[in-house]
Image 1 (cartoon, rainbow, N blue to C red):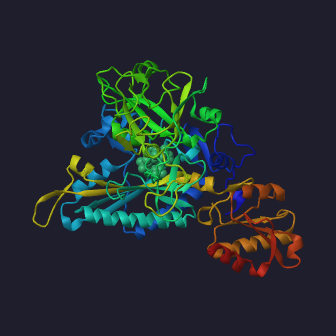
Image 2 (image 1 turned 45 degrees about the vertical axis):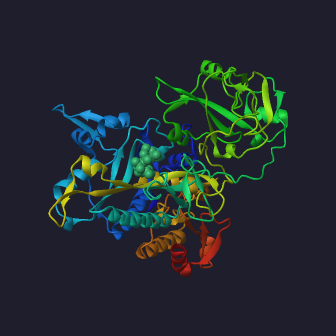
Image 3 (image 1 turned 60 degrees about the vertical axis):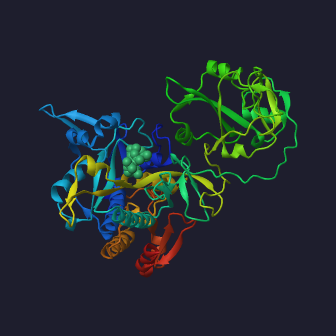
Length: 591
Ligand code: ATP
Ligand code: MG
């Protein structure tokens, strides 16, 4: 490609609404242009990147035995009613009517359509298993489209759907797709992790997300560097700490903490580490008609994991101030698990020789596993302006009967697989594989005849890759102050030739043209920048665009039979003999 015949649309500044670096760089490098919120044109330069990503995905899917087809973007809403998913899908599903007032949607995903095809086409166990895939445009009316192509409304996805006679065969294909995805993201040159995306109820293999690791990622991931354990922070289990000795040495004391209602402030004020604090979160659990006032106890530095809590207590909401006052006799900020109101004489105290105290209302107390093992801790006194120090379970209050995992894991926690210590990082979800089982096949009556001639429902898996999102994710991972640093396999061009004074020097022009022809003939994806701009201007463009290899053709070097070479991340340029340049570049490209 010659620059004069191509379209380069670099910008000096990124539009101010681009929040993250990949979005800014994609606009500045002229890879994309915005048409409407979450809807982008892939400009010629960007399209080359997208096509390269696509090609790698396609090659690996084919290699893994999946079969390509192409389904329509427009789908009849009827199918979504049949699967039962239509009504629940919500406003992310873009619906419209055709001229006959029939309802249609623009496909956000294609389980319904592929299942419809398979139920019509596949009749016998002899035709199974099959894995069909497409690389196709999706539309999801995302509530917050942002970060450019990373969370667009219109985006390109590779989606595959496999059909099987048995669950075991689905699991086999799932492993194969897991391996194919690993190959794809490795070939794309990305740092990534496969993350368990469910709670492990089906042995942890029911669903995995593939994440590109990047600080700007929307998802928090916990992983163990010593093993392949990785999970969404929301789902990673926090193990119970080992209980160490007795050590209830401190006596319980009531301390004035006026105006200190936040855990961190109380800890600082009392001069104790925040890890010695217990915070109580008051929630109303259960049915709205009969909510149960519940205190969730967490160590001061830990965060409540609402998904885990919900698993244990069902739907809940945070308690209102008046509900807290009613049950604890105290306003928020100073609440805690130690009852401090005299019991009525008829009520038996919780410990034989313990204090004769209770809450002012019915209170269910649930402790996180970490809290269950704490000694000599600090908590609210259920009296405005006061906290208790040196508190111990079994002596100052009963050990809660419910001690469960309700917090987010933090860095330094033991890995649930017992193989090391967890670290946290952020990730961008670029792929998702899922064992759907018979969910769609059952609803849409997608059946086959087994060896006995009996009708059976198919087992099904689905496997998505965010093809357009990958481009943004790759840039999040690869950039510097001068622009994009593309992995070699997906850069818009592998090599750029920048001639100095192309229009003025016959010698330069001849040499640059010859080199260009030579590289083209060798099948190298090369661009000759014949725009005849100032060298600094051209250099800046190609560094912004992120082309991995740059060759400068100048009179001074040519007189000594030399060309200048610089890799995108090299700190300095070096000279290479003009005769050896082809071999030199080929070697770089195969590295
Ligand atoms: P997310 O949690 O990011 O919304 P999802 O769980 O909705 O993703 P899937 O339905 O599994 O995504 O879709 C498969 C893949 O498509 C995702 O792994 C992601 O890479 C990509 N993808 C999903 N939504 C978008 C979007 N709005 N823009 C770009 N890519 C997307
Ligand atoms: Mg989504």
